[in-house]
Every structure is written in structure tokens, then in C-alpha cells.
Length: 178
Image (cartoon, rainbow, N blue to C red):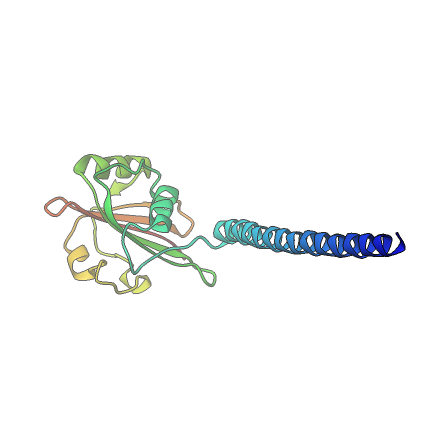
């Protein structure tokens, strides 16, 4: 009987140890999974905060999610089907900031942009602020110089320039301060 009690005790001890090891392994796996999920969530929340302070612009590729978001932020017109090939660039380092957008859109959308930003036909059409703009394949300064410019200013060194090529349905929007 003593022998049976010893065997039963050792068996119970072995089973308890195995069960504890199994529980410990499950706890470690669950802990690791929770840590990974927390890291992902923290990274996503951090990205949101950074994007609000330093919103991303993608000057290399058209129609990316950041470009569509910046288009809505800056152009303030609905992102309709006719709006395509959205490129954008920002230079917001230092005391001056400038933002460049190039995209295709219909004449109706172009008119909506002009109205939304209260842009007026620039009859002088001579100063285009090309020195403040970057050179990109999607931002052809020589071509832009041939287009009629619409502009707006707050009178305090904040400007918006807009050009639209009705033949190619290509628009250029330049927002900057001095």
C-alpha cells in the first residue's frame, strides 16, 4: 500500500509538473502575443500623431494614400473619379513652407478649386515663384509658365497659385508662404 501511495504521489507530482509547464508555456505565448499586439497598436497610434504634426507627402509615386489625403487637406474639394495622377511635395522645414500638387482633373473640378480657394485670374501672370519650387518630371516649370495663372494672397506673405491646362486637363497647385 505504501508503494502504491508513493507511485500515486509521484504520478500526481509528474502530472502537476506537466500541467504547470503547459500552463506556463500557454502563459508565455499569450504574453508574447499581447506584447506584439501592444507594439503594433502603439506604433499605429504614434504614426497618427506624427502624421498630424508631419503629414507625409509622396513626390515619387502618384495616387498614394498620403497624396490623396494631402489633396483633400489642401485642395478642399471632393476626391472625385476625374482626379488622377496626384503627386505632391512639401518643403516645410524652416520659417517658410511650400506645397506643390500636380494632378489631372476635369474642367468642372478645376472650376471648383478656383472657387473654393477664391482664386482670381492673375492678369500680370509674371511672378510664378519658380525659385521656391522643386524640379520634378510631374512639375514642368517651362510648361507651367505658358499657362494662365490664378492666384490668391492673404496680404501677409501667404499665397496660392493655380494653373490649369485645359488641353491635357492637368492642374498645378502651389501653396506657399514667405
